[in-house]
Image (cartoon, rainbow, N blue to C red; front, side):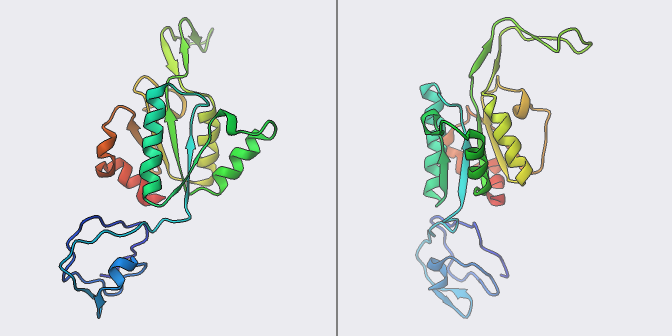
Length: 209
């Protein structure tokens, strides 16, 4: 009762007798079976997506290992099935000039961002902050693409909800585990993506999009 059902999706749900009095943005599959605000049907209800027209920007490396590419494309499939447009750029899609402006335009028309922290740079021998009291040896460390920092930074400036999906060895920059923001969710790229729609982090991020 009295609920805003924007972004709410029902899948195989029994609603017979449920009250939708004073609710707004009711999915058409429910609204057509309401009598004085009460739902009457013994059949299970599955609603179409209410997010049509919203875009999700994918922050991706220009080139990926096959397994990483499969993970990104599975997130793309899931979100497109929910009615979102996914802005999925690979290296060849970027213009020869004006790359930053192309990213800015894409993020400005998006309602959310998924940033993938995949292994892109392997530091065999390295030093972070040399000649300071915070000097750190980086031997055997992995980094993601530096474009993630640019694209997530732009999204933060717009205040977009961000989902970080990253390899557990990628934990620097925007993927630093010590960083916590109310509009930023974090998921391991190793989780079973078949259960992603029942994951509370994914669900909370999606509710903010």
